[in-house]
Length: 495
Image (tube, rainbow, N blue to C red; front, top):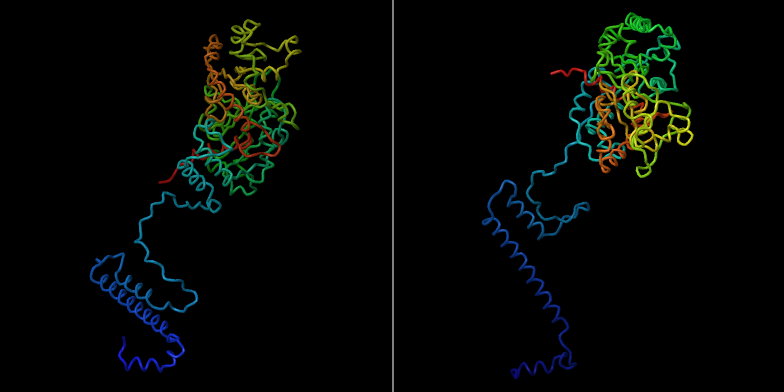
């Protein structure tokens, strides 16, 4: 019980008389708790500061002063600046970069370079080409080195400028033949003349100089039938080159090493023999790429595909073939019997000796009424491509057009684009002495291997097609690329 004087005072107080609690008792307790919490917070901050000051080791990358300042800031009112965010935790010590990504290489300014300097830089870039991971436009098994091919092609598109001489009288010059078996030289001439990307009017900017002559028109204009004398053709071309050397300074700078010609007639190589520098220094793109005669130089000269164009307005009219499952004939050939190889081929496999080996001279009428020449190629697994008078044959490209694996029988023949293409992936090369074993060689190729070769033929086809408006990686660009690559490869690098 409370003392009597307190009990009396309480009895006379207003609160007691109304039976109510004191009005501010809870508020006083709450304020006391807040003050206690604030004091505890300050004490904790001070203790933490003291602990960090005396306990943490010193480090060049992490400063205890920084931690102390941040703790002080966290325990006080944040600054009123509207753009500052709440202070974040201290950052981790800096770590060395572990990314394997290579910094982007700065491209040289080729347009500022002299032509010779640009070629040297291009050669270095091609030699250092990075591996191609995947490219839907290029099938790697077709190429010897797809990475270098792609890089050199890209540089060709970016750098190459060609100057076309306007000298020379028609039809020998500037008149492209667009049909027949020698149409390759004409289609190349036509498409290069129409090119805005590669042709330049200022010869000082050119990396290559084109001699726009047609070996076919040269033969038709100057050759005396049955004379067997090709000297007038060679003399005519020699005099033309001498005229260029006297009129312009470009030939004499390199003795013709940066000049090129494109000739598909069998006599194309022989038209260059009267001019030493033309024959030895210039780049010759030739269908008759025979390495045994001392005119065609592998590595410098370019083996030009011989294409038969029957309808110039529709050069791709008959392109395409049958699938492997519908090709019932093992091997097929039909053509004129001349040269050293074809008589031997007919002797061993002609005259219907073997139903698997359909080898004819001219296709007999009774046979062609059932299945014509093109249908035979589209129904055959292998198409025989023996040399005629010369090592080249249009049947190689015909086989690719009709998706038939070509069988090449021509010793000393440098295959088209052999500087970049791996012909073992899509063709069979048989030595002339092995003609008697031809069927055994072809039957020895497994079905799996043949299917892979047939697939490669189909993928390769795009690189051997002419288009009225050139497409990337088509035959026009493949020829120009081989000429460009020959020039780049023969530029000497400076120390």
